[in-house]
Length: 112
Length: 116
Image 1 (cartoon, rainbow over the protein chains, first blue to last red):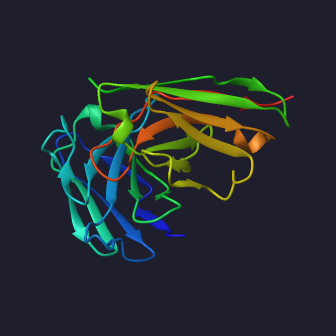
Image 2: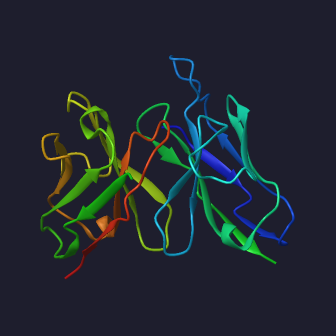
Image 3: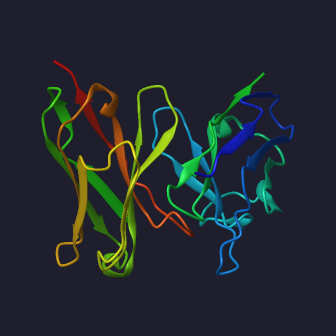
């Protein structure tokens, strides 16, 4: 199984300041079809998960452009350029290169 | 508007059975692969099962293999998860989600509680 490791597990951030979450996979996420199936999900308190970014850096419909994804191979990053109050929640990276699909442990974003 | 609406959750005794449903609308269900993902109370996300658009490819997490069965009815735009021999550790909110490889949608979830 591919193990997804996120850092940090908790991130206190000041409103208006940037935030960054890292995700490392135990093996390359480059599929034989040349796509890299790495996604980022946001889960606000009491809500279901919501897709933010897919295939490393593609923002999903309706996702604000303050969210961006980058990386390659086994190392990936989610960045929020200026944190807003509505960004509070838990963020997960997820790999869908192979089964079983696996998730990172989650990073809790909170406001200082 | 894409909608995924899960139903069928509830309280069941250990060893019992339950079938979850996911009603899809707003997209071409018959050409979309689908997944079930669960989340135990206060825990992270755990993928449970995958079914391709034609039901030709099906995968399960080791933790549910042999006990859960995923199926779909493309004529009814519906996804199912039949669960037997339920254990306390199966207690979770169960979400249906589309392919998990691109622009994907998640349902609101349905809670399954396994307890005597």
